[in-house]
Amino acid sequence: MDAIVVDNLTYKYPAGREILKNLDFRVRPGEIVAVIGLSGCGKSTLCLCLGGIIPHYLGGELTGQVWVNGKNTREYKVAQLALEVGLVFQDPDTQLFSATVEDEIAFAPENLCLPVEVVRERVNSVLEMLGISDLRQNSPSNLSGGQKHLVAMGAVLALDPAILVLDEVMAQQDSLGKKTIKDILVDLRRQGKTILIVEHDLESVSIADRVLVLEGGFLIRDGQAANILEEREFLIRQKLAYEV
Image 1 (cartoon, rainbow, N blue to C red):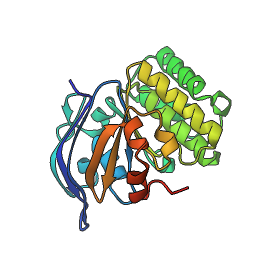
Image 2 (image 1 turned 90 degrees about the vertical axis):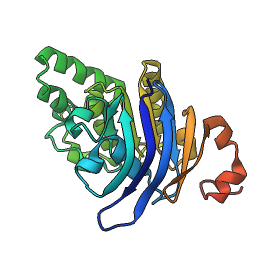
Image 3 (image 1 turned 60 degrees about the vertical axis):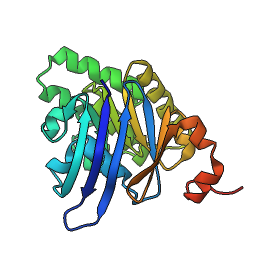
Image 4 (image 1 turned 30 degrees about the vertical axis):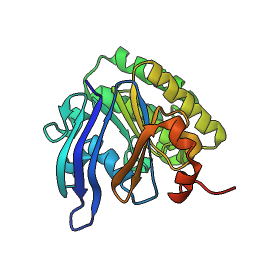
């Protein structure tokens, strides 16, 4: 069974323009797939569709189907889909609300009524994995943008979802932070996680197995990452790379 199936997906925001147009693709379990394209091409909207935020919270007109781990996103509540898909938003402030980093990461497993020792183990494991154990008692609101993205990642990893959808989590990281996240994602893939990442920086998607290129809401290229990242002329035409 494919981890993600997007079948003829088209979406129009309420009182807005059509932002996704007839998307068709599949992601196998254990793949890292990167989605690239200029701002406004539909990358973040696609992430919201995979997490069920669209259509359950934002409304609009959606046609086609999205399946995650065999579940049709139309037929399950967002809270149920969160057990399958860990979605980290482009702006982490939209999903951070607890008083401390520790509380933020513990929130979801606590709400599943997991045993206290299991919650503690998950929190400690996630903090160590992300290298933010020293931030345990800090308020998320006082952290840098890059640190907030790590905490938001930790909050979804604490649920141990099979699929991770990450919307530009490396955008506010320095070079060391980007390397740390890439190493973490490669390790998660080894553990069998399926990962979809949205990024602008082509260097940040170098760990991907495949790359999807969106333009104006259409999927215009789906291929092996190594091949697409070597197509300099294509990337320059798409304004995703520059002549040197």
